[in-house]
Length: 208
Image 1 (cartoon, rainbow, N blue to C red):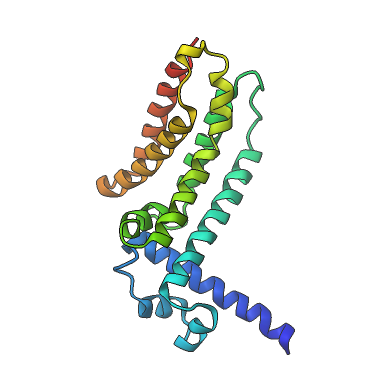
Image 2: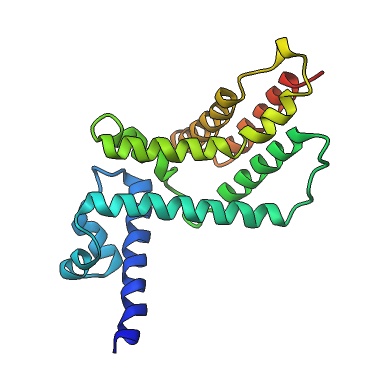
């Protein structure tokens, strides 16, 4: 019986996390009530508390799942594209940006922003645990770019080399800001245009 119950329990937990992530992205953490998540996931209160201590515990699970899915999807998209020439590290940065653009295009729900961005806005000032975890997520996003930026910077004269850690964070700032503006302006094409401007800026920054 335990083997029969286990897949069902995993499916229930995944459904709760998935619906919570969708609602947090759409409405934000504070405006999403626990009862609303339970209705959307079609689970009972008892089933919820079997898997989670409270709404905060659920939100941490949403963050973990979002980052896992993000890593997997971006890697899958990149595997479908040509590998850039190793002599041009900046092309690896552009490849990742292209993967992010494609990931945004493939989003299953047309509404709702980045759950990491939404939770950062809602919780970083009031909850130290969330602030720390969300900071780690944003730094993880930046670290996807930093090694290749550093490799590209080595090709420049020392006086022209940028702070690649801050530049990587700047890239994440553009991405997250573009997602926010996409929602505010109701303009699905805005992220692609902003990423195109970002590429132009990076090319100029590393032009020898």
